[in-house]
Length: 150
Image (cartoon, rainbow, N blue to C red):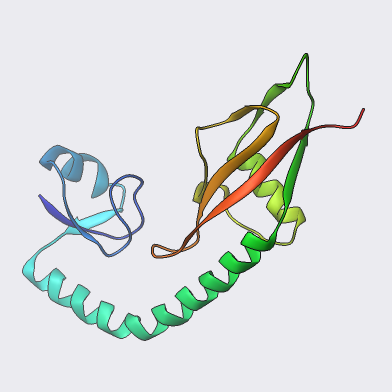
């Protein structure tokens, strides 16, 4: 079943992509949730016209995302967390904590666009995360988890 996505869908595609999915997934989940529409001939023509008109606006959005990416690369993020015996953390550090740390630095990034490499962090040290700012722009961010001052 061919569908046109109306919004970004995790592990499937971005808004306005034409994707092929199994019939049940499209009919029972994507279409009722309002995340996709059937890719009929007329819908594809409308999509092509919209993409043509949006191409100019898209360039400005990509340029803005690149500026934010350069600003993020310049940041030195340190996340303080409670530490137990050795270098083990009480709890873990994940994308929510990283989003809060970026917010303190003046860069508001939604937590769903941040993915910490390897999942959640459970020890002190240096780690890496990928931040997706746009479908064409993503940045690797290095951050460090340090022991909280007692």
